[in-house]
Image (tube, rainbow, N blue to C red):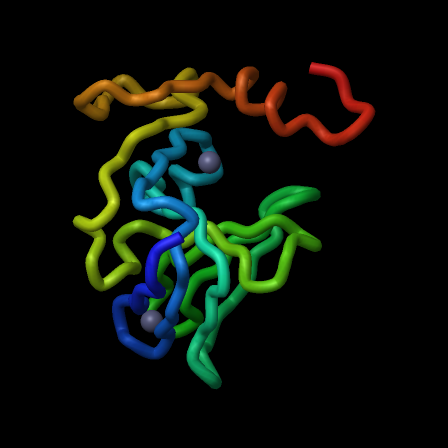
Length: 143
Ligand SMILES: [Zn+2]
Ligand SMILES: [Zn+2]
């Protein structure tokens, strides 16, 4: 666990403090993340996330088990979280942090959904969508 860090949306109406679970970030190439982020969605798993009072956050339920938050004023992509997950547990967009450079990108998921237009450099842990679903399949589910 590291110290709480701060960040905001583009317009500054939404600000947060969050404690990163680890000092690294992951990229998701899935179709939903690409539509939400307008590019590669790079994010950091965090605990103890606290938003400022009155932050105009809008939440979009993107699947049966996940929802995504964005600023209702400027539209900035802010977080992903599991529906019914632990309070304060959110995966925050890397570039919402005031210090995004603090998190090297060490893994990427849904690599089979990545368009051919670009590729991340470096020696990353890479998982396909099927591999991710196998790891996080609901209890009783099969791969
Ligand atoms: Zn904003
Ligand atoms: Zn994704």
